[in-house]
Amino acid sequence: MGCWYGSLFLSSDEVTLLSDPYVSEVYSILTMINILLNKLASTESSNREILMTLLEHQFNYKVISSIREVNHDDLTIEYCTNCGRNHGVPPMILGTIENIKNKINNWKMHDS
Image: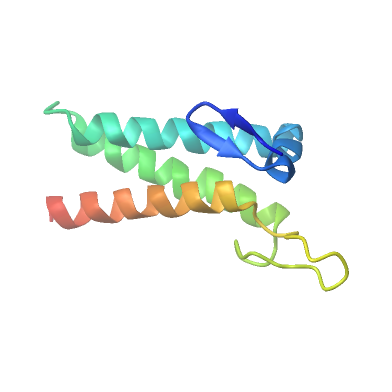
């Protein structure tokens, strides 16, 4: 059984993960970055390029490096041979990270 978290349906394992303050904070920050990237992509602001660069820097050097400090297996999903559960990066976080990386890469290709 799961529940809705905003527009995302979470499994019971993911709901349990969100009760962890670290996981919840990281997911919240990633969600904000994702929203900001969407807003910046659709704006014509003269500051757009610098804002995108700052957001990319924060994502790469603050958020991703913080996750890697906790999860030394370089953001991979690791399934336990004993219990069969993922003890690596939660799929909801990994999916959001991939989404952000794709948006940043698309922005770089568009603006180059």
